[in-house]
Length: 263
Image (cartoon, rainbow, N blue to C red; front, side, top):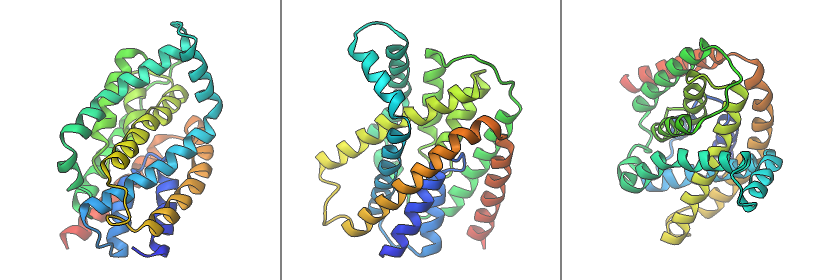
């Protein structure tokens, strides 16, 4: 993978991480278009590094919320912040189980399989279509909701299923407020990404031998900068816009991907 490709894919990741259109799906489509010949393990590693960059951009945008959560946790009182942090921890369980026990099977899916991406984008489109018709409320995310949303996050590890789309849609369909659902969705993925990076570092997967360090670094910077813009923009957009717009987009891209794959 050359530098130009890394920049393009980094920008794609940064812009689509917070849009309910599947950043992983767009990365796989981008790799297929650019002719990326990386083996599945290296392809997945590049995807993880770009997700790490957008996780950092999430921390920057939500720095006040995160600091408030940390202060609440260290007070060792069952306050609102500690409860919210506990819900995030609960939501991580399904994805952790998938990551630990099915990592090799998951890696094999990140090899430019645009037919799979197309089909999963149609699933994302359906979720967004249904969520758009859900009644908005002021209901916060409960503990049971957090676990169900966590299952959606685990399913969204498939390329083409939008993580933010799946988690926000699930939360809204459960009757939660859209703004609260978006905040929970953006924050719940941060610990998972940092955990994945820590696992890869300790396991020696982030090495000069297994990856193009220059491309990874440049892609990381591009994704971080694009992520800052997209996250800030999406906070306002989720509150005002309808998910049906994204549903139509995912359906169109998904159908195109399926047609191209079958040609």
